Structure formats: C-alpha cells, structure tokens
Length: 200
Ligand SMILES: [Zn+2]
Image (cartoon, rainbow, N blue to C red; front, side, top):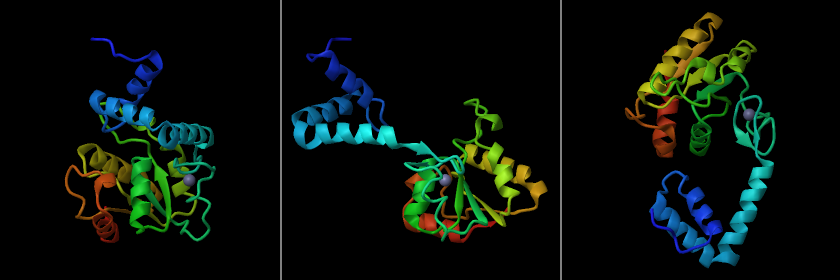
C-alpha cells in the first residue's frame, strides 16, 4: 500500500473515520480533508462534541438504552406506561420507535439478535434482567425485532421464554418488509406496524 502524503495524526484520523458505518477509505479521506480545511467551524467543535459525549455516555442499567443519565430518560419518565414493555434488538431501533412517536411504554434492548452463524447465543443477549422485569408487573410485551431471519428467530425464542410468565406477547404486524430493519423504516410505516401488532 502506498504511503499517504500526510503525517501520522492525519493517517490515524482517516483510519478511524473509515470504521464508521457508510464510510470506506475513499469517503473517509474526503471527510478528513473537509474537517482539516474547516478547523474552526467543524474540526474543533466536533472534537469537543466527541470528547463530551464520550465522557457523558451511560448505558441504562434498566433497559440498555444509551443516554447521559442512568436510569435513562425513557425509563425515568413517569408519564410512560410501565406495564407495557417493547423489546428491541438495538438502541437504534429504540430511537427509531421514539422518532415514530407511536409507543408510550418502556423498552428492553437485547443488544443483538440470535445468530448461529455469528455465534450469538442467548447468553450473549441482555436477557437476565428481562424475565425479572416481565415478572415484575408487565401486562404486555411487544416484540419489535427486525424482519430478518435472526430477528424472527429471536422473536420465537423470546415467545417461548416468556410463555411460562403468561404475559401477553405481541409482535409488529405487516408493514415491516422482509429483511427490513426498523431503523431504516419511515416513521409512518413503523407507526402502522406498531399499531397493528398482533398476538404471537
Ligand atoms: Zn432505560
């Protein structure tokens, strides 16, 4: 690989940027160059924002959401229905549902989906506290998994795990296209799928 005509700091910046979703080496170079050219208006504020976020970020002990407070903003909001629990794979899904504004209960973030291929077993998911939460006065559990093989495998696994607790278990309805990830759905589609959720 040919060397880049820039110092190691800039090289490192580009290497890190290339790890971001949607950025390959080429776009990382372009982003880095933009940052370097706009030092005062972009690079310095971004560096400060990254440092602040890194220092402030907390993982909610209750639900697994990312926030700057623990319990997170969602978990400590007294106006939300504490008897309905929506299980999602990732924080991105929680944020997508919040953007759609369709759900007013609480969440539980699994931190992934079951996948034999990727070696994601139930032990790797945030399941321990889930049963305790469900048995602590939950009326309905909404399974809001992605419409992928892994997501649906996870949904069926959870339905089995939750069966003994006799809680009402529902899942998102049509509108979530096969292979679809919640984060990529428009708010209207996600909202419709949520409202038309059905029992498993
Ligand atoms: Zn929380």
